[in-house]
Length: 245
Image (cartoon, rainbow, N blue to C red; front, side, top):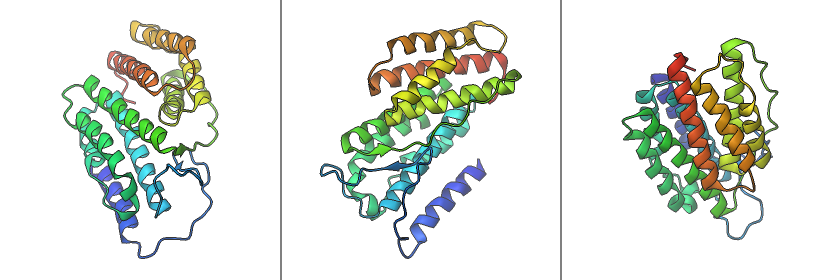
């Protein structure tokens, strides 16, 4: 885990130690970037928008890594990384968002306190729900780049890459309200798996099909519940097959 902490420390140091705010540059749609609409009276003022964007990017990256660690069965590593999400951001540029940071920190502590992988996944989804709720309250938008091509399935590695692609799309649908991404992720998981058949793999496909049939306008709570069930199915499949990916 030392490399994760070093990366986090370096990111914080770069933001905290920069003597001058760089001039604003157009925000390119990068898969994990967040930005607020330029004109929105109810949105907290972004005194230092680049700091806010860096903070959101860091949260996004940490959460995606926590999820991968949990599905791979590495609860201890996931809990250690979750600690970073419980630390309040003190940069003045984030002062307008301070009240919204508390639900995220509280949810992240549930990951820290988890004694099972299932509890860790529940905490991970709770953090995602808190992020989505903050976006909805503030009117902020999560900007995502066009989805990359679906990896071609070739054995276990190819199937895992496809499932990871689908999970990324579902994540976009959950925290950013991206309806098209949500549907794309479900459609891929609902397809017949190239993995050997088994109860865990079948459960994942069945859950995806049912969720796809129920798909409607973005509903954060409904999507969070469905996403947690899908992750639990992924966890069961990985445990059965011993795939740490």
